[in-house]
Image (cartoon, rainbow, N blue to C red):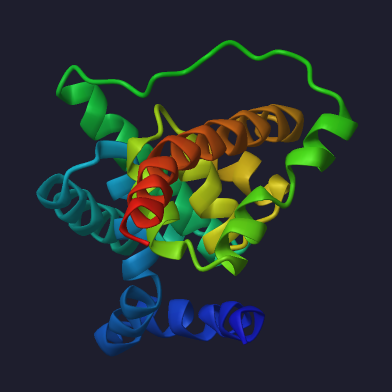
Length: 197
C-alpha cells in the first residue's frame, strides 16, 4: 500500500508543475505528518515543528522544478525537511548532539536489529513514541525514518547526507539508547503496577 502511494507521487508532481494547486494539496496531505514528525524529533517543540513543516512545504513547492526524479519524491521531501530543521536549530544557536562514529560489527547490529519491533509487539507503541522525544541528537530521527517511515539505509543516507555505514552505526547507537530510555521509563511503571497488584 505504502509503496503504491509512493509510485503515484510523480503524476501529482507533474500536475503541480502545470499549475494544479489541488495536486500539490494531495502531496502535502500525503507527507504532512511525516514532515511534522521529523521536525518534532529534531526541535522537540510543537510550534517550532509546525513552523518548520510550513517552511518545508513552501520550499518543496518553490523547488519542485528542481526535482529530477533521481530519487523517490518521499526521499527528496525528507531531505528538505531534515535540512530545514537543521537550519532552524542553527539560527537559534541550538544543535543536534552528535557523537563520534565508532566501528560496530554486523553481528552487533543484527543483535540490536529487532528491539523496536519486539517492543512494538508488546504494545509499547506509546512508550516508544514518548521515549523517542527523550533521545539526544538525531537518534529519534533515525528510528522514525527507519521504523515508522520505512526508509532503507540508503534512503536515510541520502536524506541526511551521510554514508550508509554511518547510518548503520548511528542507527545501532540510537536503538541502544532507545532501549535504555525505555528500560528507565518502564521499570518504574512495572514496579508501580506490581505494588498495586
